[in-house]
Length: 295
Image (tube, rainbow, N blue to C red; front, side, top):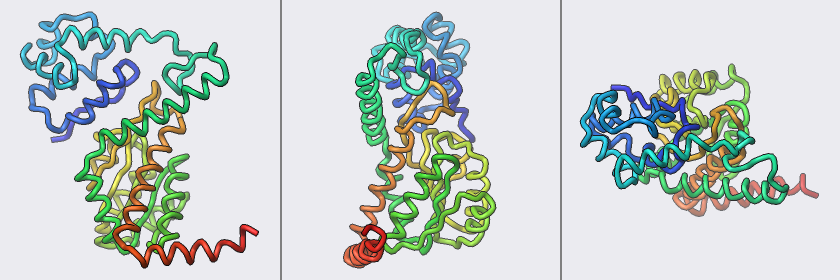
C-alpha cells in the first residue's frame, strides 16, 4: 500500500517534529499512521482543536493520539499543540530561504545564521540516516560495474561532482546534463549496475524518467532525497535521506546540496576503504595526470 505522507504543509510544522516523523513513519501502526497523516494535513489547525476533535477527524482513538504525541517527543497532545502554535506564528521571518533570518539582520549575523543552518542540516541528516540503507548503497556501489549519477538543475552539479569523484578513483561512471543522454545512458545500464538519483523533492520529472529506464535495464536504484514518500523515492531500491527543510520546496539553498555532497563524499571514501590499494593507486595516477593543468 502506498503511503499518504503529505509534505505540502512543511512551513507549518515544527522542524524537530518533522524529523521525528521522517524517522518513525514506516514503523507506525495503522491507527498511528492515520493520526500522523491527519497531523500533516492540517498542521495550521492543530493548535486550536481538542484531542477529541482531532481523533474523530483522523479516524483513530484519543489514546492513539496520545501515543503518537509521545512518539514524536512530546509529553502529550497539549505540548504538541503548543509546539505547532509556535511553528505557525513565526511571522518575523521575511527571508524565505532560511528560517530565522530577517531583513533587519546585520550582514555578519546573516552569515552566522547561514553557517549554523547548514551545520544543523548536516547534523540532522546524519541523525536520521538508516545504517542498513547506507550500507546497502555502499554495497551496490562497490559491486556495480558502472555507476550512473543523475540530477536536475543544481542537483546536477552534485551528480557531476560525484561522477568525477568516483571516476577519479577508478570506478566506471557516467553522467550527463542532457535529458536525452540521461535516457540513453540509463538504457545501457545492466543488471548489477547502480543508478544514483539526486533529487531534494523527489519529484524531478526527467530524473524519474531516467530512473524508470534504469530500473527496466536491471540497475539497482539509489536515491538521495529529502522526501522518502516522493515519486522517485517510491521507485527506488535504496533511499538515503537528507534533512533540510525550508518554507518552500522549490527554494534553492546551499544546505540542500551540501548534505547530498557529504553523503556522496563519505560513500566515495568508504568505497576506497573497501577496494584498498588499487583505488588509492588510481587516485594518485589521476592526481598526477591532471597536474599539467595546474601549472
